[in-house]
Amino acid sequence: MIFENKILVIRGQKVMLSFHLAEIYGIEPRALMQSVKRNLGRFPEDFMFQLTEKEFGNLKSQFVTSSWGGLRRAMPYAFTEHGIAMLSSVLNSPRAIQMNIYIIRAFIKMREILAIDKNIELKLLQFQKELDKRGEDIDHILHILKNLLDEPIKPPGLLGFVDSSK
Image 1: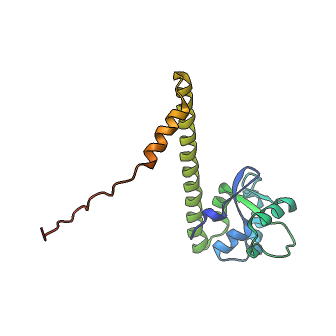
Image 2 (image 1 turned 45 degrees about the horizontal axis):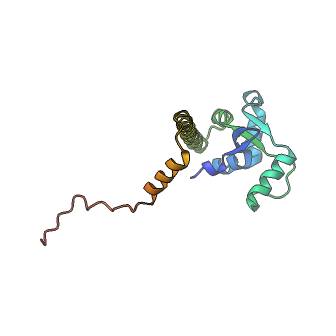
C-alpha cells in the first residue's frame, strides 16, 4: 500500500485524515472516531484536530475526487504522526497494528526525503556563497554544467558476459 499520497500538510503539519485512516484500518470512520472519543485524553491538539469547513473545502477542490465523500455531518479529523502512533493503543486489532507500522514508516520515509532535499538546498546556497566570495561568474559555471549534462552517455560494456563466438 502507498501511504505517502495520503499524507497531507494542513496547518503546517503532516497529517492523515480520519476517513483515510479508517479505510486503511478496514473500519468505518465513525468506529475510528468512537474509539478516539472514548480515549480523548490520549489525543491532545498536537496529535489530532478537526478540520474547518474552509480547510476541508480547500482540500476537496485540490484533489477533485469523489472518494472524499458527499455530505458529512461533521468535518473530518486530521491526525499527526504522533496521533497515528497513539491510535495503535486505541485500535488493537492485528490489522490496525500492522497498518500503523506501515504508516509510521511512510512518515519516516517522507521526513528522510525532505531532509535530503533540505541538505541539497543548503549545499547549493553554500556553493552560491563561495562563488560570490571568489567573484566567479555563475553563468560561466552553469554553461559548463549544461555542457556536461548535454554530453552523450556511453553505455557501459556488458558485465559478466563472455562472448564465446570470438
